Amino acid sequence: MFDDVSGLTEKILCNIAEPVVLFDENIQIQWINPAAEMFFEHSTEFMFGKNCSFLFPLLTHCSDKCPILKSHNSNKIEYLVSEGINQPMRFIESIPFKENNKKFILALIHNVPDIDKNKALRRDFAAELNSCKTLKSAIKVISSSILALTSISVFGFYTKNNDIFELYHGKNIPKFLPAQVSREININKPLYLSAHNQTFISDSNFPDGLALIPITKPGNESSALLFTGSEIFTANTRSLLEMLASVLGECIDRFIY
Image 1: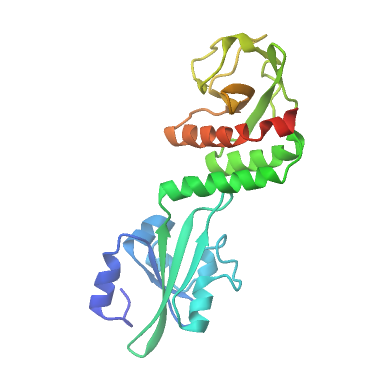
Image 2: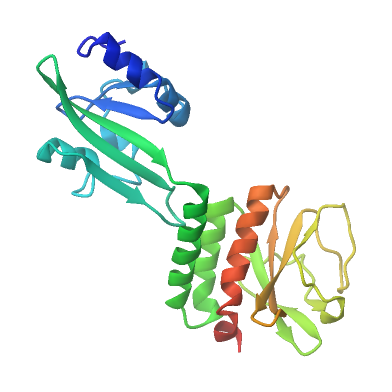
């Protein structure tokens, strides 16, 4: 596919399961392996000659943090770890090498294991919430986190008031949701509604495709309910929403009471 490296080098790179991108000395793409073609959903022919920022706009920013640029300048292996809610979990390893008297930079994109990813997400979400003083100030953090992790944009809260949960009125809360939900039903685990016109103990029905997740503080007492609206809730989406709710349970009293 490319003429400046040996057939053995190309064969090895082709058989690496992780995405590999080969840059020339001008930091322009010369070749990507089959795993990278699937990962980026582009062919080598399409990517040829493009700058590294085309592939990694959120990770490199063409700054001093860019491992490809750093590797080019230092002639050493460089790394970049991107962990967090608003960026994908990626670990880029940039390796300089020479072949046929030409300089190349080899970028390997490693996926961070899911168990480490979940720990990082919990840590980052909790850190962002710790900077908030009220529920109103936390809404932006919660909204951006839910949207980034699940692509769900409809969400809100029911906050506790004696024997009922009252709808917290925010900009992102649709008007068709009931204003109150009875606490007598004891929602102690996530409830995912999908049946059309399914009824609920409230002054009206919930819409089709709604998650109602208790935000529980230590002692298993529900302090609030998180709701999100979506046409479908996959297993991964449910897991992420429940993770966010569990982190919220550790600090929800600070926002509401």
